Image 1 (cartoon, rainbow, N blue to C red):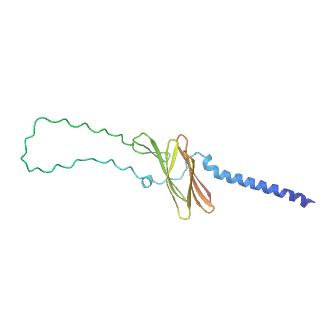
Image 2 (cartoon, rainbow, N blue to C red):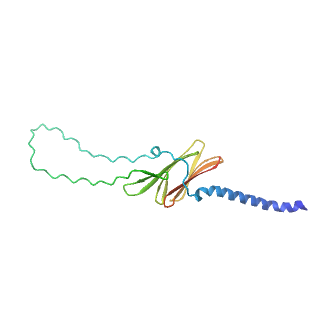
Image 3 (tube, helix red, strand yellow):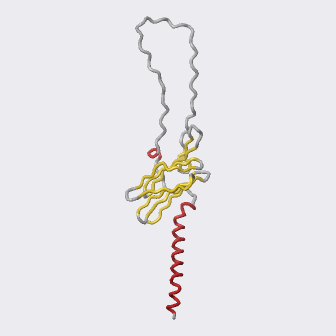
Length: 185
């Protein structure tokens, strides 16, 4: 009679094991979302990852062609010189805050840029207040890259190989916040 009673519990025990396993997987998968600390991984130098803005064009007038006529003495009256062209404000120099390169454009918009190098590849992420943008994501050999962005201020970049993946989760929370996680391996 004891084997009959135990048989009735097998599906319940299987269900409990599956539930615990799914809770464990969900906990690991949600860690990048739940943590708000910046990663301790060194970031790649941004001078290789982000191109500098092109320099402003310089306008010059071509030299006057030489004249074969007799030169006339210059007159004493001068025409007023044209007023100087208004200069647009130049962007401020970049600073680094919590690993993010911070620049302010001529429009006053603050931009945060950071390069991430993980075992699965490299990604460059740019943030402006309330928005997260993926600049580039390059997987290492054997890895693939996927991105998920369900809202403008939340981005996940995942580098995957069989049974092993790296997640870079970037979110705007009144400042740029990023978390790097590795699962498997």
